[in-house]
Length: 317
Ligand code: GLU
Image (tube, rainbow, N blue to C red; front, side, top):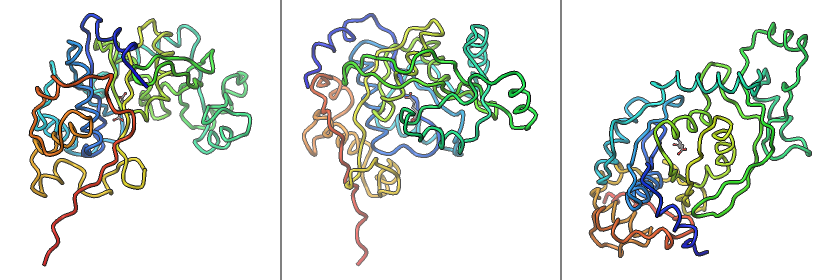
C-alpha cells in the first residue's frame, strides 16, 4: 500500500505535538523502543514537539519509570518539557467525567468481569462489546444492585456502535464502540478516558503507537468528540513479533536494552538494529537519530511486523 497521498496532509499541518506514552509495568523491550523511535521520528519529521507521558494509573512496577526514561535517553531520544504522569492528573479525568455525566452520558455498572465475559461472548454480541446489561436499570433494580455492596464502575452511554477514524498507515478504519468504562469500580479512571483527556490537554495532535491499539482508536476518537475535543492524527505502527509470530514479550530472551547491554551490545548497536528494521540503515551500519531522521519517510515504512530474533548468550565452555 502506498501511504503517500494520505501523508501529505499531516506533514504539512502546523506544528502540534506527538508523544510516547509507556505504562511503567516493566522494562521496555526492543519492540516498545522501536515504537518510541517511530513516534519521535514522526513528530520531529513534521516539526512537532515530542512529549512523554507515563501512564501509571495501574500496573506500576517499582523503578520501571526511571529505567524506561533512561533507555529512551540512551537511544538518543529527547523530549520537550517535563514528563507527565497520569497519576498526578486525576482531577482532569474527573472533570471530563462530570461533563459527560451532566450531559446524561454515563451510567453505573455493577457487572462482574465474569458476567461481562459471559454476556459479551453471546452470538449476537459484537466481539467483546459490553452488552448494556446495566444501561437501563429501573430505580429499584439500581437500588438493589447498590445495596449488594459492589462499588459500581461508571460507563459511557454511547449512542453509536461503531466509529470511523483515518489512520496515516491504515487508511480509513471503522471499529466497534460500546459503553466503555470511564471509571472503574475501584475509582481509577479508565485508560480510554485518560488517554483522550491527556492527548487533548497536552496539545497532542499526532498519536503514533503500536497497532494493537488500532481497534481502540475509534472509541477514543468518538469519546473525544463527545467531550468537544479534536481527535489526533493516528499512525498505528506494526508491532514486533517473536519467531513464532506472537507478540514479542520479555520471556522471548534478551529483548530489553539492559539485557542487550549485558551481552555487549551498546545503545548505538541497538539503535542500528531498530533503524535497520525500519529500512533506515544497512545491517551493521553505525547511525545516530539525526541520520535516521534525515532518511525517515513514513510513506516507505514497512507495513509488516518486525520479527525479532534475540541474540543468545555466549555458551559457557
Ligand atoms: N500506555 C499504553 C501502553 O503502554 C499506550 C497508550 C497509547 O499510546 O495510547 O501500551
